[in-house]
Image (cartoon, rainbow, N blue to C red):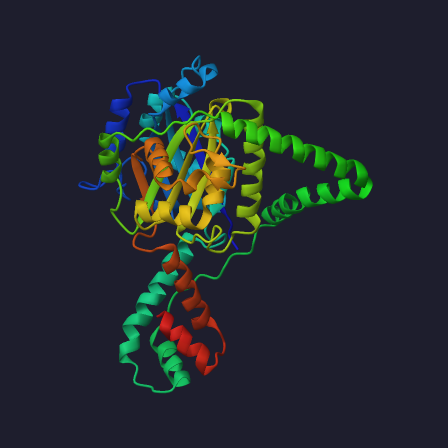
Length: 430
């Protein structure tokens, strides 16, 4: 299995942001705002067969005025950032170095962020690389090559199926295998270093908790009870004292966002905002993000984030010493359906992930209300959403559902033997 990796480059914009946006717009397809030309001159994404998704986005926060409800934050003047993000197979470090070496015009883009004309692009990018607090991958181990080859296999089987005249399932399967000869790359062995890191990440919190209970059972239980009581009191106090901010998003912002959506079956989403100040909120959110990252890395690894199956990749990233953060995702379907999916299937998850953001609808005990205040939540997320300047997907036209179905088709095609019922179910997938 080849695991997925990512790199996220974030640097403050020091020159004219309007000229930067103009140059980024030059990477996109004519008539499709925000949709990157796979063969654009700055970063020809189509050359790199390990890239799943990529984006350039100017992180210009339109919601800093909401900080007026928290005077302690007003003394900070936050910069505008440029973010370059790539989700890829195998080593992101190797890919970053390759892109820096083979894409000299990328140097021109990062000059807006202070890169010297004679500076080393690879070293500069590594120096401005940030680590997401939490990342989610729809299907860990499914590579770009696999997605493309399995889509091709599905297309060839659909084309061959009407030409088969066998009536019995076994004979029909034999005919299909005789007519279709796909090139399917065998999975690479899982890197040992990744296995070790993953095991350590999985067991570390479990072992730590078990040792505390075994070595100091009474003290651990006492601390848990006392800590839980203090947490409940502090949480309720903060929830009841949080200012209510429920401003409608400007119509011009909605119009601009809609221009970059619905170009294909998959869409992009980027949002930025300020975190509520205070040690309690900051510590709670760090703990929540650690738990979410653990679940995404070890539990939700095969097609679903809770009950949601439309997200390909998602990342939560802090900025400005955790005073702000941004979230980005790649999802199937329309924006309204995406939000409804979250509200109806994982509203409590939204509360966990975003309730520390200024302007988030008020929660009760963290679980209740919040995202279930549907219209208030939808105004909140649109208000904080920003346009993605250039966005790339390696397998356009394929949803997460399509990718999972194509993998099942491949598994059936390569399986040594199937019963008649298994063959019928497999044919229905085609």
